[in-house]
Length: 247
Ligand code: SAM
Image (cartoon, rainbow, N blue to C red; front, side):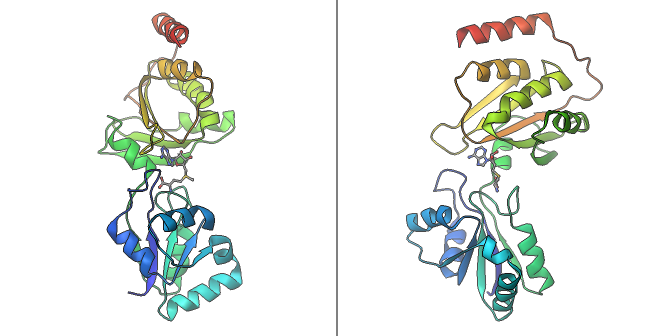
């Protein structure tokens, strides 16, 4: 059917794309991409020849109008981001809103998403969760964002850049104490997929002992009910030192 299709693509493993997504990408008149070169790799892998257009073009006023009128005339336009689900810490929602405003049907084509993939294997509660996107990059804003998080059986999910992970873990430790349980999911669905689960002090020490923290990261934790007294516990400081020493 004509309309706008928001199509989820893999977050690493190229097999993580649905049969329906591949069919929609094949039958679309055009695929609007965050980065056409990135999407071309996926299209080449699956032998798809659908023409691509970049969001930048899409977002230019004239271009958006052109696409809106194409959509109204019955075009099928697929929207993808570089990885995962469009609109989730990625462009997509504005395009969807524009299509809705133009009276064009919008179809979700579900698939891979890093936050949900991390959550389901985290061991944290899944009945309730909050996805916050990226933590603020500045220390002050990051700490106050952490302090405002609700407590209770709700998992908090963040995307984090590898070069900021240690800083964020250090802030978590300051705000919630060294025993706060955290889960770091790294390189999900890829060759070097890794889950680190444990007290924030231990996870921080484990990662600090590496030369460099690489890859794509989802950071997750739930906050116990009630106010926790935050202070560096002696035994945890020792564990931290031990982990560091072991490398
Ligand atoms: N739209 C994507 C989705 O549905 O997951 C997210 C896009 S966001 C710009 C990119 C961030 O998602 C990365 O910096 C990382 O925090 C997280 N991410 C993406 N792929 C990942 C993976 N394979 N493993 C862990 N985190 C990932």
